Every structure is written in C-alpha cells, then in structure tokens.
Length: 157
Length: 414
Image (cartoon, rainbow over all chains, first blue to last red; front, side, top):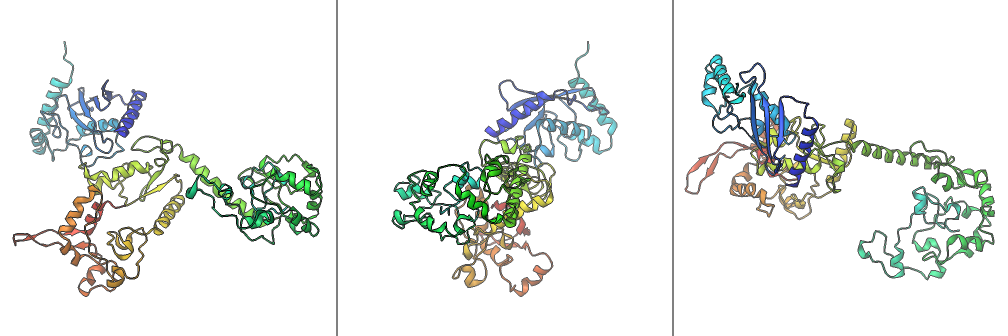
C-alpha cells in the first residue's frame, strides 16, 4: 500500500515535470485519490482514429506495481481489442505480460501502439475483428472512422 | 614501555598521542579485545558485548600489559625500544597494572624514566640510533597531511604518501607492511568508489534510488543473473514471488527481468552495483561462496529432500546415520509446515507422492538404475512421467507429462 502510493507519487511528479514531453498523452490524477487516474490520448495518425481524442480510466490496485493497473476506454471506440460496450482493453501487458517496470505513461504509449496495430486474432469486439480477419480493411476503417467522428471528436458548430 | 597492545586510534591512522601513547603503534602487535568493564566487574552488554569477557588471570600488581591480554609477548616485536640492550632492565621497573590504568600512561612513563614530558625525550635519541626499518612510523605525520609538529627533529620515520588514502603511512623501510597497506587501502578505496557510484542508481520498480531507501535492509541491490538491470532486492524479490495473487505468467514475465525480459533463475543481493562483468562475477561468486557454507535446510544433513538437488546453492552435508547415509537416496517428500502460499504445491506433491517418487530422477544416486539410465544420458533427465493416476473410484486417469522444472519453478524456495 505504502509502496504503491510512493511509486504513484513519483509517477505523478514525473508527469508534472514532463508535461510537454509527449503531446499525444495527457495523464491526470484524480484530485482526491492517487489510485484513480484518467488519460487523454490522441488517435495515432494514419489510422482511422486520427483526429480523435480518447479518454482512458485507470484504476490502480494497491499491489501496484506488482500488479497491472486496470485500464478501460471511456470514449467509445471501434477496435478489435477493445470491448465496444465496457471499453475493456485486451492487451497482454495489462494481463499476463505485465512488468513492474511499466509506468502509467508507458501503458498509454502501449495503448496508442495497439490502436495503430490491432490484433484481430484475439478480439474483444468480434464485429471489428471479423472485418479485419476477412480482409475488409476498408470496411473496418470506415466503421472505426465513423465512431471516432461520433464519439472522439469535439462537436462542430 | 611494554607496548604490546595495538592502539585503536593508531589503527585508524588518527592517534594524536604519537610516541606518548600508552598503546603500541606497531602493526605487528595484536589489538586488545578484552572488555575492561567486565574485568572491573560490570559489563552492561553481558553476553552481547563485542569485546571478550576474560577474567583477570593474575594479580594486577605483577601483571604486565602483555600477560593481561593473555597473548605471548612477541619477541621479534619491532617497536625498537625493547630490542635495545640497556633499556630492558628498565622495562621491569615500568611493569605496571595495565587495566585499569590509574594514571595517564604518558605521565607514568616520563616520571619513571626520570624525564620531563617533553618532545625531546632521550628515548628519541635511542630511537634514532636504530636501524631505519626498526623505527616506528610517526603517527602525527600519518594522521595529518604530513605535518608532524616535531618536523625534522622527529625521531620516528615519516611515512611516505599513500596515493590511495592520501595519508603518510607507508613505512619507507618495511616493504611487506607497505604492500599490505597498499593492498588493503586499494581494496577499501575501490569499495568506497563503487559505493559512491552506486548512489545514483535507481530501481525500475519503485523508481527510488536503491541506496536512499529508509532502512538498511532495503538499501541493497538485487542483481539478476542474466542481465544488468538494477533493482532493489526487496522490489525484485516481491515481484518474483507475487505469482500467487496475480495472473502473470511465471516463465515469460515473473522470472524475467522487468525491463528486458531475460529469464534469470536467481537474484543476488549486493550492497554495491557493478560496472564490469568481472565485478559482477566477483559479487556472484562471493554470494555463492557464502551460501555454500550454510547448510541447506531442505537437505537437512541427508534427512530431507532438497528440491534443487545437486544444483542447490547451499551446502549438502550428509551426516552419518542420516537417510542419505543409509540408503544413498533422498527420503520421500513429507508434508512439512511451510508458509501459507506454498500450501498448494505441497498438497499437490503429497497427493501424488507415491507416483512421483518412483519416477523422479534420483540426482544423488551415482549408480543409476538401468532402466533410467538412458533417460539421464540423452538430456531428458528432468522429465517426470505422471501418466497413470489412480483416482479414488478406481478409474485410471491419464495425465499429461509434467516437467520437473514446472514443479521447481512453483516451489518458491529461496
């Protein structure tokens, strides 16, 4: 408990210090609870998520960093490895390949990488996975782009 | 001037009394490890005292300092004074109770030899007449930066500058002593240097500097055998032992380096970090050497079954009359009281004990059974076959092969 708090505090200071280091990630700690974080990440360019801003919710366990944080998308996203309803993310480093050397910041980076490189073979969103697996890249991209426009972009005008 | 006990302050290069010190300034003399409080009757440390508790063996009046520490006087002692003929008779007159000293020793000495307590003592003249190798080194010069207050008149040899520690403590005429000093000094310096460099190093798990942790137990590195990434010993051990609660893979994540994911089978504690492979080797070897001197609690002198077998780091000593001694193989595994997180493994082993026992390679037995023989030679020695498990209702269940390493990786034995 004490260890996780100390470690999160370190990460908090690091985030404060290097706010501008990674313009794609904006990591914010809950004002009253250091175990709750939210992050805003930009959709990677040359993907259907480009231009969108996605919100992530982090729930950090007390055993952190020996256990991975629980991360889910708050913004709706059409991606084979993200549950369409709950926002749950299927990513090995958040499950069985976790390492205590990962930080919240690097988890965000891994999620951005996952958005650019979906893994259709272990889908949480079967519709999205099936589109990709059947080779319908165009269909996947247009669906993903549509949901990005609908959910992850500021409403215009 | 029977100076037979090494001066504690001189040993640290900081005795301010110089020649007037009542203790010996000769490295060949043994240090006094006798508790003076105990000899006076009361030592509040009792059995935990780090000094020896020796009862005064002789009446104090007749005891010279050397007999009090119950060490034979070193005849070849090169203090110098004792070897000069003509000074020796004076020694007996000087014999005085060593413990407890009633008067400051320097007053005693100068009074007895009929001189004032001055720097221009006649002893010094005698000292000057000695061979240079017999003259003791000047501790004033050794302690300070070579500025002995007596300057050129000093009867002692002024040591040469040790390049490592910066003290004038190298005796110009005693080559062995010089070598010894340089060797220990360099070793000490190297340790300090690596300790200084280690200060900056951060653990990637807690993101703290390892040597800035609050308690001394935490201020230790945990070295991984296969890679060079630094961690606190507690962080890396906690991580490697956390399998029970998290769903993390044992062999692809837990046993690997959190940074580079190289699989390491053991962690080596160390107070310093290393910069060269040789330094790492040295740390690992000294750690293994230390463990080899400790008896393995699983092996239990031949009465227990160590899961690590011959590759165990701890000492496997077979006591006459033990199980190993009689049967030349380790005893079957027994349920033992262990910490709670190991219970699962234990009960598993207990359940299949009778099946495992027969097929398990007997690592201690040199004369392998003939039917097991080729299995050892062709490299499949760690395979344990658990095919036919008799269920309670009489059915035979066919189980898949289980590797011994799977057992071992789950055992969590340090």
